[in-house]
Image (cartoon, rainbow, N blue to C red; front, top):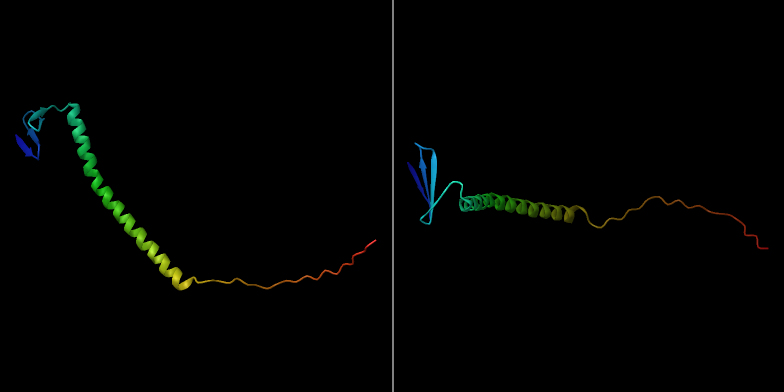
Length: 99
């Protein structure tokens, strides 16, 4: 038998019968127990939130560096621009006939 002790959770693994015995706060929980499933699902969710927050922090940091680089390049290269080109002038010679 192997015992794993956490704060209020004790896991007992039996190699002979391939059973898992879970004791939470002194109460025995069966494998098929709804309470056990809820506790395990909550634990998995909490464990998976850690890398999610780490990735979100990395994304936020990279967006900040990107925006800073865009501002720096815009400040040094893209000042006010004037677009000009050739102007084509057409002269219209028409007579107005007033009756």
